Image 1: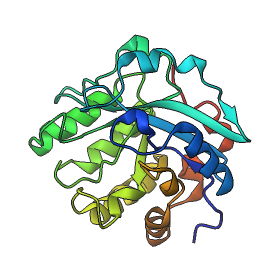
Image 2: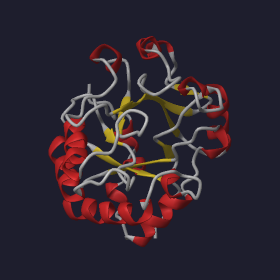
Image 3: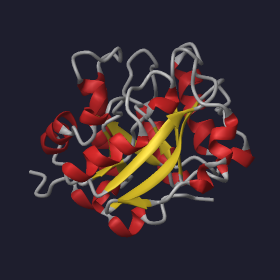
Length: 239
């Protein structure tokens, strides 16, 4: 059993993402009240409809990295655009981000073959700016999970356990089954994971019920969970 409360949420969205509902201050206030010590606000990349403009990322340097006792990490959930792994974030914008998650979204890339999808993920891992692969559990994008995990080890990239994926309202398919397999492979290859709520409204921040269930189900070791390492969270960016 996971013996400690997860106090870092590494994947959330504010109103800047266009289809989320809370301001940054509302999110920080909720995090503080609910004992979330580290909050990553990771807006959608600009290929997502109605997401922020590139200039949003250029100006991240103006934001405080600590408010009301909450450590703040600002970055992007970039969209993987093609099967080479190209993402919708320029190097200039990426340099202003503390963290970059790269994810497959149906609005930005259509599911391909297992090989194409896997190459897209691996291509994104090769990008020196990418720290995390977001929600690789979506069954609409068939993946060779062994290759994904082995390359995560090779390129020093974290694999996300997205708690929202297993929610009944999620559009992702077979997430629990797929993520169970991914976690077993991460344990086998000693690849670290990150846990995120993928909150699009403040009151979902820190909702890790589904993630904790899978951690306990697979007996996943705490030492391989990024959220449990405050020292690593201080230096999450690879720039």
